[in-house]
Image (cartoon, rainbow, N blue to C red; front, side):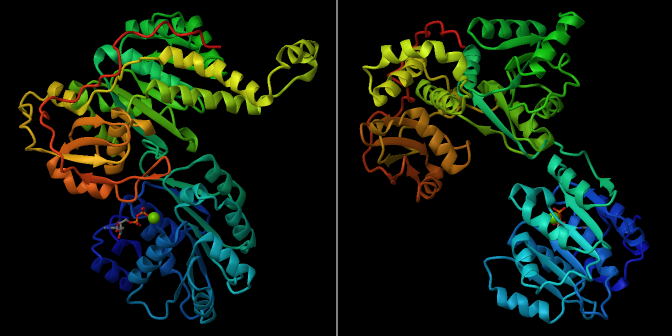
Length: 568
Ligand code: ADP
Ligand code: MG
């Protein structure tokens, strides 16, 4: 079907959609419209967001409704009130020139009485959120015995929002003889289960690649100097104690080298590259699959076709030159509806590559700050506490030692005991990360290093381009320059704002930002809370004499930390 006219849809409907600017069917419509006009089987239809799925089911359903009867023939379920209203309006628009079509929109948070009156007056089509629909079914106001179509729209979102039980109950209450249609952008396992449970050997129509750059993958990048790359990697790993991931490197040599360094530093890692024999590769892969190993360091070629479940992270040790490689690599996490994170390590000269990748995946990569030692210690500590809480205790096994242990520790109170035990772990990381330098590239350094040769590095004319802000938190509240930069980036939701000098005082601080973003900064901090405290940000009246020097951190020595302790 190339045109709407060919499809056999009522000319009055076509007239209406032409007025909406629908010239020709979208790819998913091209496939579902003739299918639904002809075939009475259940259908799963998968297509990306924004591809016209509402009309893909709305038009053929409208075409087949019995307008002589006021009985409810169609039930469309959708995750949010906004989507319900949108679908309902869309269908009203498509049916503008048809007589006697009535649509009820049923969602929570609005008066139920009006919705009941609407239903009582007889509506052929109902559009609703699962919660409210179930409520109305239970009140016997929404009658399902004449239902011919049930549509689960944005089914993946519905499950994400925790509507599974409601959906189960609603679907179980609908009559046997009906056509069920499931529309979704992705096909996570839960959707497949619903399809299996409530649909009778449904056909599947898919447009485009399923789960392309899966919605559930987060894309982050960290800016650091080339020589700090490995330390940055180490910190990122340390900040994610439960990491289970692949680190991609460009060459075999890099791969072997990074893996060796990681192993040497006590990480549970191994290399996978073309220099290994097939048997060695199988061995490594197997250990990784059964999670006897946390980190696989691999080249693209060696990892091709690798399908490992439940990876939490994919790390690009170097940003790939070809965006397609980025997509391939990132696609190894966030599979089958699971969540995952794709992390890229970058130095400023590589920033331009980011844009190509962002264009390809249609998403922004968010800058994250390389965590400071303190933050890592905290994360490790809480990971440990969590483990302690959940560990299975084999009483018989430890029994023989307990007497001696109790005696030895008897002089400690319960509180002291916990303090001691926490310190064992905390001190270990704390001493490792004591005096650890900040590995992030500041905005000033970024400007200087920027690889864009055509762009003259912006010269700072003292005070002219920067506005100085006062913020009522300081080092007493554990604010550091890095943290502040992170907060500014996060609150403004952009990383394009140039940040200048930062002065952290005990209980307040100053920071400078490109003057053109003055208003954005002020509005970004309205209602912002830091550690439960109301934060106020104001333009500072105080002018610093010397603002021409880029910000330098003073408190961190540049000495290399001692060799880390072996991880258990
Ligand atoms: P999805 O449900 O797949 O996310 P929608 O059904 O909400 O997508 O449609 C997205 C947008 O595309 C809407 O604004 C809709 O009006 C428009 N649209 C749908 N079908 C067509 C078409 N055949 N031609 C032009 N625009 C269309
Ligand atoms: Mg939709």
